[in-house]
Length: 148
Image 1 (cartoon, rainbow, N blue to C red):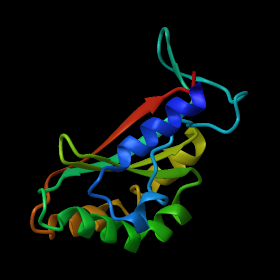
Image 2 (image 1 turned 30 degrees about the vertical axis):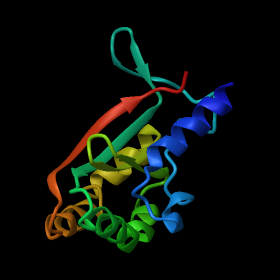
Image 3 (image 1 turned 45 degrees about the vertical axis):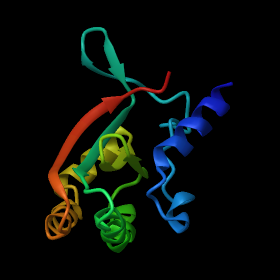
């Protein structure tokens, strides 16, 4: 059942606007850790997490090609991103809210190492998004999650 729910949500996240060449590459994974025995960290009393996440997101315009251009921009920095952080990188598209998201997850040590390098290539990627007509509300955020 868990597999079916993960698969369904992954397929739904891809959106009808995503070209077929990207659909298999950009499935959102609900599984954040391959090691179920990983230590949890305390954020505050009562809340524990084992994964740190950096998300880059923006809104795209419908039917103007901005979503495809955002994916092309991601492709141009993806190799550098994967070289910088020892973690997983996923892309999600919400067609209801016209959102494009890049979600990078890592354990605490890998995340801290990436953070000390200013989340490279974040600045370059966000600047590229800012140069695409139809892209707006460009943001980045950090959050924590735990695999349950």
